[in-house]
Amino acid sequence: MEKLFGTDGIRGIANKFPIEPTTVVRIGKSLGIFLKRKNPKASVVIGKDTRLSGYMIEYALTAGLLSAGADVLLVGPMPTPAVSHLTKSLNCSAGVVISASHNPAEHNGIKIFNERGYKLDESDEQEIEQIFANLDDSENGNEIGKAYRIDDARGRYIELVKNTIENYSLEGMRVVIDCANGASYAIAPKVFAELGAEVFALNVKPNGLNINKDCGALHPQAMQKEVKKRNANLGIAFDGDADRLVVCDENGNIVSGDALLAIFAKYMLEKGLLTKNAIVATKMSNLALEECLHKFGVKVLRTDVGDKYVASAMRKHGVNLGGEQSGHIIFGDYCASPDAIITALQLVRIMKESSKPLSELLKIFRPYPQILINIPVREKIPFEKVRTVQKAIKEAEHKLANNGRVFVRYSGTEQLARVMLEGKNEREIKELAENIAGAIRKELGA
Image (tube, rainbow, N blue to C red):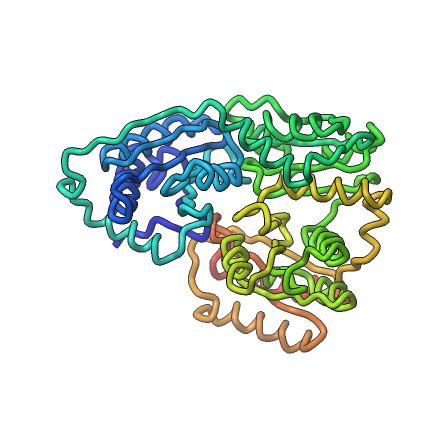
């Protein structure tokens, strides 16, 4: 059986398997058959980011779904979390986002949400792959679905997002927003401006090829400079599909996702809004987050890396705040998946309510030194099967013992190995991390 799904949907280079038209039509048809087995009147909302290849994939995916008898609702360029919201509000059987998130323009992907706006369970992904591998044209019969374009989708989402802070006035706040020439370009600046903030927007002219190019969450340097130039209260940089953000304070200093979680958890606890007095974070989150929140009586529940695992753990434990160090934050009361615009709004509201600059709010959190090294690899052999890599990992674990952490994994969306070490002695963890990374480069390096 062919493997299509990774940790975050189906990814690849546009016009190459599996992100090429013939395969995408089959994916669409397989998804349609999967949905029709559960609901004879299945419908799917499809959104996309601003990549040029999005048109090709959108039409191919639509053709496949229609051929299976499913209806399609097209909403055009929209943030990933917007499609999650719209799937529920439009009463659809599934939602699809055509995006490769933070990756360069030549990449693209297909993310699928279920009828509740959550990313598909692995069992559902496996069933779709099974249908794909054994596609039977006779199953859908002669029924053909209809396609519709939803013209008010953007307005629906904007109002929903604004209501998460009850249309609280942000007058007096000066905000730099870098939209990465991606899906948030026509929405994020408008949301903040309509709520009264003074907005300085960067990278809001997508041309299909410039998404994430030297801008946005992966390249926040321009945002940092603009914050200081404009004397702004903070800067916000989104990734290509606006489910992730990177923030800087009024001095241009980058703020980690862990620090944001600490600020949000403390605020929600004080307001009586934090359910179970707990949050969900991943194995990558800094140990200092646990120490910080422990002082306030908040427990940190750990899960695997990936926002879908965070969302799943939040549902399992009845927790309404979770996120990743990378800047994927989920407010369970408002959204089923990470929403960077909602996250940014919550932060700016806290800043205005407290009358404190972001640098002051950040004083509650002091992270341990952490080293992260990404190594391009030619293949993803389990690390326990590579003797020299395993030896380097064991050596680091032994030296750090209870004074640090070692976390080595493969990226689920890129051909990379990620080495993360954390501890109190920065020089020591850097040396140990380089040792592990060197072993990976030697044995598996691209």
